[in-house]
Image 1 (spheres, rainbow, N blue to C red):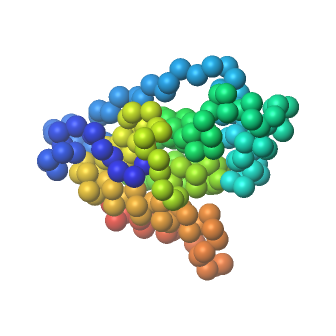
Image 2: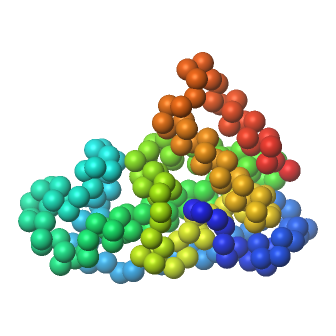
Length: 205
């Protein structure tokens, strides 16, 4: 979700949206993930469950093998290693995240689109903090991801503001606010609902 690439001619030129106003219609196609064997689907599901429940340190081939009841070397017949496994988890999560964000934007009008997008973004990150960090913190091995995954997940930000760099700034702001919230870095008496409302107002219209 680093930037809303591939969002159509407006994204490339910075042109203002047409007569339809905001939010813009979808442009990026929903990505098609590579076909996976039932075993790979099972491995990815276990990896995500371990990540969500036990954190990033649990995401090892040995730990996954323990849960599946097979030796870790056997996992390498299905995934090349931890990096590829993480990529499978990330791309599936980005598709899911994109579906959520596109869905809320589809039902919003121009006056509420930024607000509903940010509420959905905050809620998803709060419900899946370890998964969110895996997807958004640190380097991303893009070569391992299915084509179009980042564009799909990032385009809702472009749809609600209509300009690519403004969309990138909105995503950066949302990510910064949410990661600080997940890490408990705000003062104890901070009213974070007001913080999110102020951020939405800064990008609205």
